Amino acid sequence: MSFFTIQQLEKSFPIGETNEMILKGIDLSLHKGEITALVGASGSGKSTLLTIAAGLQSASNGHIYFNEQDLTSLSQEQLRQMRAEQFGFVFQFAHLVPFLTAEEQLLLMLDVANKKKNKKDVARVLELVGMTHRKTAYPSSLSGGEKQRIAIARAIIHEPKILFADEPTASLDSKRSSEVMMLLQSLTKTLNLTTLLVTHDEEMLRYVDKTVHMRDGKILVEQLA
Image 1 (cartoon, helix red, strand yellow):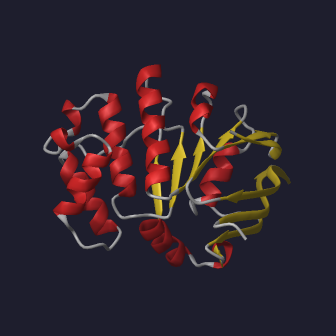
Image 2 (tube, one colour):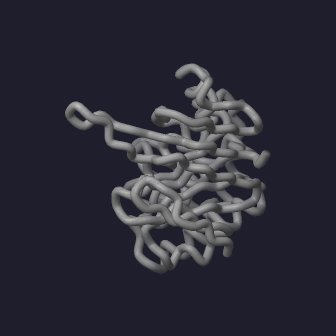
């Protein structure tokens, strides 16, 4: 079994007196040191798949195995602890705390993940994302690309095993988008992460290891880089 495996995953929502099936029997395997990209038109189910995989909403049927543990059998509190300690998240917008410096953003994440606060670890991660020189900067003084780099640093400071990225370049121009994707590619390899991301930008697919094309809640094809 792979490090992170999705088996026969289904998700439906009530629409009037019927249920609309959003995900229809998804099977997907993710591996360490690889980026898997979910692509497809709006409504294809890619964001729903990512949020269920990340434990942010529940599935209607199916199983999700992380390191051979079935996440669909966990309680809400167990899932919350799993997300805090084992998962990292990067979103379209950085969502940085406006009154905290870059360094303080990372220290806060360590506290959330119940990890010992260590400024040496923070300094190391800021160096990994090329933001050492901005450690005392507040979000209001950072560019869009810099904010996203800090958001990525915050997502990995607690040493997660899985990184979930939902449209991480959608708010950036093409140059900054490529820089962020190259950073995610490098960190995935260097830290041996398992990275699952959603993107609508096919230009970004050159940085991933596997592309999963979705339509109408199903996987059409899995394409290796």
